[in-house]
Image 1 (tube, rainbow, N blue to C red):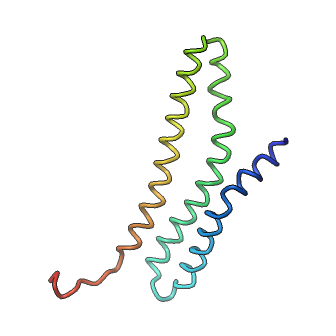
Image 2: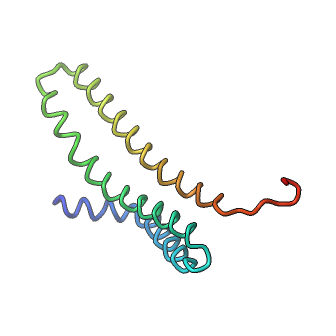
Image 3: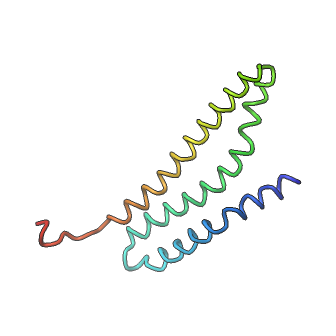
Length: 120
C-alpha cells in the first residue's frame, strides 16, 4: 500500500471528527456578526484542531523511523525502551496540542458573559 493511500485511509478514519469540526466552523462563521470575538476564538480553535489532525498524521508516520533507525544496533530490551519513550513523548506532545485547541474552545464558551443579579 502506498503512503498516499495510507494517509487517505488514516484521514478517512478521522472523517467523522473532521466533519463535526467543519460543521462547527461553519456555524461559528455564521455567527460572526453577532459575536465576533467569540466566533474568532472558536474559529482559531477549530482551525487548530484541523491542523492538529493533519500534522500528527505525518508526525506519527515520519518521526518514529528517524528515531528508531539508530536503535537497530541496540538489544531488544533497549529498543523496546526507546520505542516506549518515543511514543510516550509523541503522545504527550499530541495531547498537549489537543489540549490547547480544547482550551481555546472552553475559553470561547465563557467569553463575553454578562453577570447575573445574584453574582453582583
